[in-house]
Structures are given as structure tokens and as C-alpha cells.
Image 1 (cartoon, one colour):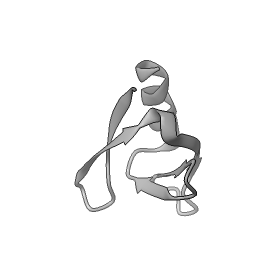
Image 2 (cartoon, rainbow, N blue to C red; image 1 turned 120 degrees about the vertical axis):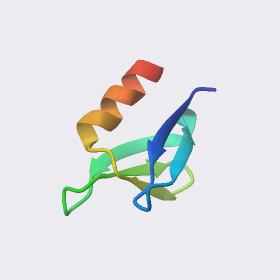
Image 3 (cartoon, rainbow, N blue to C red; image 1 turned 180 degrees about the horizontal axis):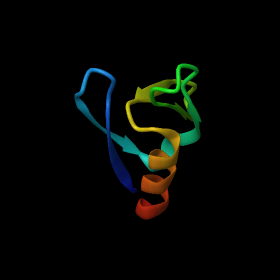
Image 4 (cartoon, rainbow, N blue to C red; image 1 turned 120 degrees about the horizontal axis):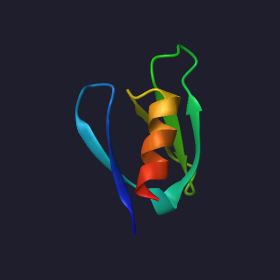
Length: 60
């Protein structure tokens, strides 16, 4: 299992299991990214979509 660390909107770190990620899309306000999981849940993070995708590629 691979894990990546991001920052929640409240500036708290969060570690996400990459195996559970289904999609990553920009937030409507352009101030971060919404990561959607295979269980239907989601997590918003402060990093922009380009940074999220880069981190996911590095960790893969």
C-alpha cells in the first residue's frame, strides 16, 4: 500500500491511501482539490490539482 500526505483546508496534515483514490478534481473555487474514494467518500485538500497529481505520480 502506498500513502501520500496532503494538507486539509484547516491546515492539518492528512495521509491518504492511494489504493482507495478514484478521482481528483479541482474544487469549484479553485482553492484546492477534491479527492474521491472508492467507498463514495471524499476529502478536500489545499494543494492544487497539478500538485496532487504530481505527488500521486511520485508515490506510485
